[in-house]
Image (cartoon, rainbow, N blue to C red; front, top):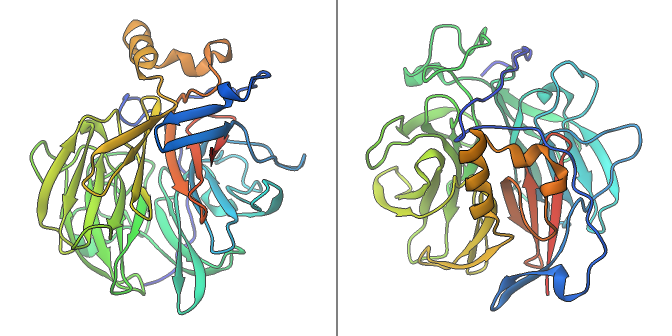
Length: 362
């Protein structure tokens, strides 16, 4: 597996299922303690929008995904601007929201998925980048590259040159990876959510092994296989895939055999678990908490009704561009969410000036 220099690419995603529409950062007003709590039942959280702060030399870009390391530090990846080649795409914050470090300039304009896995007692960062980058990589927590790879041409699903000289083109024969899931055997799965819609399986050294899924309308196929996770909460581990444009989750055995579909979401984007709980951020303005049977037991920051009405009226989610319509305690466009070690939540929204909300158990 050769390491090839990154190339440049940037393109606007036009469909509502995969749209990234710019919005300004929210400024929350003074509230009572009752107004600062969202959720229901046993799953109530105090919220703080725009929680971490960057030093003046950096600026927020389109926030995409989040993850937490063993020390409870938060990692945030931005799509970034391909023209700002010296600006990092990954920022790290301590548990109090204080800036620690930044890196990842090579993912500018395409930064997307980010996950942390402990290998041999040492944590590593896994990064997936789409658009002009079309790559995925394993790095140290300080940004040192372990390996970097490109489209798995051996799968037979990609246009000629997509790995060695990827073009600035989108399509089902193009490689646009979105996120990872870690297998019990040390390998990992990689979702090509904006490209072929295949879920690729690799060994621990990033050697391609197999794939399943692909684009389609039936069981076991996807329309924007955006996020995925290995769910260990039941009697047998299973793969959970967010089939975003179908507004559903699909589950599979670890070898990729279809099991079931769970419907009723609003463009579900990603997955994370903590103890018996699963979190699903939904692009259509809410975050859902699921139990071990994948039943929704709580919703957080739900603004779906207003978001859907806005989309229909304006043929696009214009509310994202109008800060005056944003409401405290409501989400605009959740793209990723993760639990920390305490069971608190971080939510990243796909907005151009970046917004990370911290949800602390009430």
